[in-house]
Image (cartoon, rainbow over all chains, first blue to last red):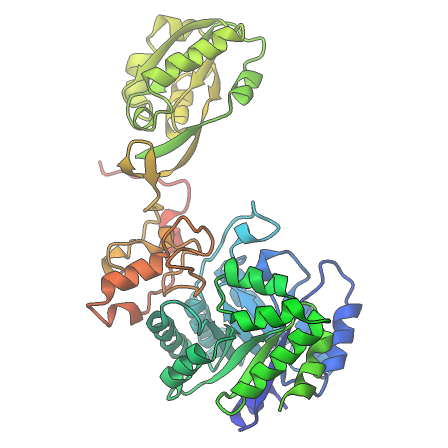
Length: 286
Length: 212
């Protein structure tokens, strides 16, 4: 089933992130993807995430596509100007990649090529609109295209952000610009999620709520303290005292999904290199 | 005002190895306010260079070294400057190039790096609020420029990564969009307005203005 079709069903949607390798060895990534075959509805392939240079999302999406898996190509505004972005959108379409998740992208100063030129020629709202413009058979220069693409466009939102009203205004702007689905930043906190769901319940798009696999208490502490992600102390305590922190993290992820399941349209799992454990998480979901 | 910072002394000295007859040029405008190329800094550099055995022929702080007319009138006619082999320039890049266009046969050693167009909060405390983009939209963003003050130049709203109102890229900076949002709150439609793609051709380099 294509992701567009999945979005039209009533099923509980599960997507997960895969990280391209730093280098050309695709074996570990493809093995992980194989383990997830039939278990998830979309494979997000990140675009140099955290501004760390890696193999490109487009190439991996194309390989997944050929293997009968449904890729969601992540596309950041960070590194390419409008010519390159439009061109890559057409390239994706030519390779049969329809699903594109559009995001601003982490700033180069947070990555491993800190001296890189910072581009951001378009912002995510403008890039969504650009993709929709290409669908109409013209480009940003107003020139006619010989063959036009068709996309299923997604965007991101942070339900835990400090200024929820501002985030909601962004959601509306992104929907207006062409977003059909949203994948969110990790959510650990029930009350904030409920508020977000309540405020977005009438919007004509699907929200796949971010679920993060915490592999130990150190990463949880880092996310809480350095990234300001609201992780309840209870989880950190459980991870710190567990005989196997990873098993505890898997349990926590499964609990989060089980609790969300009646309320949300789907989840987006971020396992940060531990994608082979996603089936275990899903097996534990009630 | 153009914000500059002084290059490391070692790097300046390296360029001047074995040079005789050095002349130092400062700037009475921006670089003086920045305390990078005023009288004091010209003197200080002169002392340092003498300590390292370099012969300083003379120095001059030009009113506006970025003005070719001033360079021609004040610097080019100066006897010592004429005799000098190398000129050490405590000016911004516009100044260096105004001087290089007039004194074509001199070796020029820029001693400053040119940083940005600055807004002064107080002396020694400068902000970059404008990036000279040639396509101003701040009438619609509460007088705050997202092109410059958002690290990602997002013109349609924030990335969602702000922490306690501060930018995720640099926690010393306020999130431009939270600041804009607070300002526009009274006008609820303000934040939802779509800002079109920027015309970067407005500042294609090199630019020229001729009004006469």
